[in-house]
Image (cartoon, rainbow, N blue to C red; front, side, top):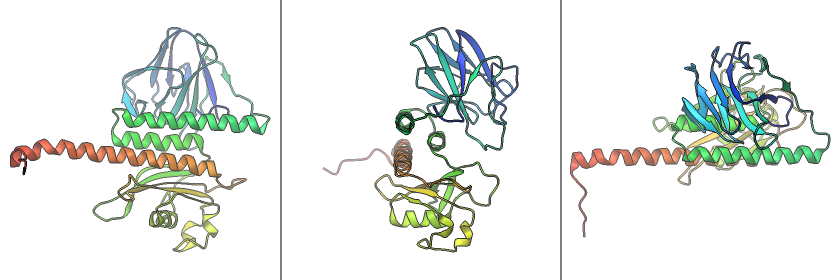
Length: 314
């Protein structure tokens, strides 16, 4: 994934079948703990591309749903464990590439190719070209993220894929999705991904409280020195810049999407970073609201059986 960025890895596919896995005897070898030794098979017949899960431990996911087999089109992404892949083509048919990026801690080994040539694209020279590629990449990511809402994946899988989408396009160290616990009325972590080593908590409670109380998405340049936030700044001694957006389906805040950096960056988050983050939080709100509606509808037949069919008052 991450087309045009330094961590992109391209694996050229010729007609035939290749396997993806952790060991070097795979055509696409990615030394990462989330992959099985032989994780998946990708079959390309010159026109169609099909991915098969080879009974892996952590599964193959397409559009947020775990699959045993799925046909892929150009522009589609799929995930094996925590390794994200994007299918792209340089010509209409025969030259097909799969770009891979690890979605776990950068402390782990980076994906490496075996038996297939790997091409590392050069960084764009002109700023305009870099910005154009950045915008197109984010637009495609948001389109794929929106498609998750009409899929058959569970809410947990959809939320996980939305978080993964943010990881693909934002330079962050930690990210989590928090949801309101109806029992305690507090925000509890639902999806957490950290790339900076272990920590007691992968988010700033001060930032989350500030954003949830105000109900607006915000970016923070230096959380550790921000005196406008409540609480004790010592709690966030490691936190540099942060993004946070409330998850609100229209009936009130039911969660928050949070990301930050704990390593020094040349510049804090940009306005377009916050716009992407806000869009992903909105998609999470729709997914959570849809799931709540589905659960409410599924309870109706049981209610009718227990109390009898509803009668009109008119």
